[in-house]
Length: 459
Image 1 (tube, one colour):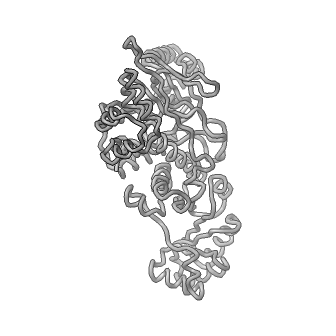
Image 2 (cartoon, helix red, strand yellow):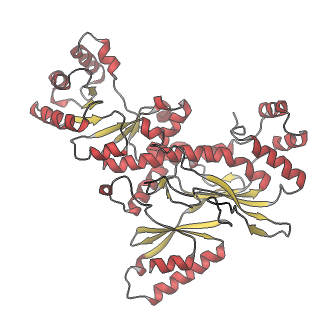
Image 3 (tube, one colour):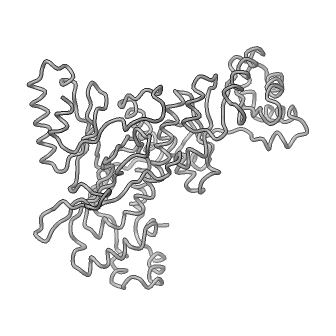
């Protein structure tokens, strides 16, 4: 199955009109970015880049696709013949998956002819908006968890294919495991899960249910203890399993108060190593409220896989530079109120002071980047009295992902996800926002588009 029809019709009608006008072959630069972050979000977490690269590799029109397009009667035969030979042959540079982004961050830069690059808009945005929505919410949750493991368990709250992508995105931002077997199989994400209330209700007594689960899964299993009476269930589970009982799960009620009571009860029964896991409509705010509760992990579903109230971060795919009739490249951009676009292809850097993120530097054009580097070097050599200057550096954010239509790295999906997970952990640490600051706050670092201003602010 190809990915070519994962697009909007207007991509194809624009292509046809541009071909007829003789402008389709003009060189173009498109960028993917967000204009803002949702209120309260300090940063966004980029996820889905690997899936985007897979979709672009599969973006071609096979016979079935062309038969369908022919039946619509919208496109001319000449256009269909052109699409039969379509392959993306341009270049893509972008942020590494797992990286943090901020307003204006050019997380992808796609370069090629108009007819070659414009077709990718919808599939790129649909993947990045979904996966980054989950990742941005999930990163806040893992931060609030303060090192306690989180399990992704939202597969029943989202489209079946979206559930796999959501599990992948959650793992990228630090979730320890998923309940989704398809995600586990495809991306080698650890899987977790034991029993639901239905299992307990199947038996005549709770004791029979626990006995059956322990016999099947061993004493290291996690027992769900809030089907009837929590206190009685914990006592029964420990009596049957002994102090080696792996964990108990709380799924309803006042989780903080119950956790305190259950911890005390487990300890009094000698089950001091038995863990307590909390589930039940959790999000980063609820996890933050539970930070002092004696909990050992969280299972999170609905609020994670639906983006925590912001399922689409607002990524857009905009033409920022194109070849003119004079054969030269020219910056272009919208000027409409609230949606103005900064023209020209841009280079992006994370400005670091003493290895901490200080600003997002986004400069249009190589000349501007070179000028800023000269200014920064001059400041470093002239202001030797300021120790922070000598610890100032620029970390390039954009890496070549596709060159001449070919992927730069032929990495398997599981290894790609592990690399994204490591990148995210490093980027969050670099940002240095304490978990105790809480989930919400101002955008963590500014996005600067002027080198002189950046040097002045840094000074």
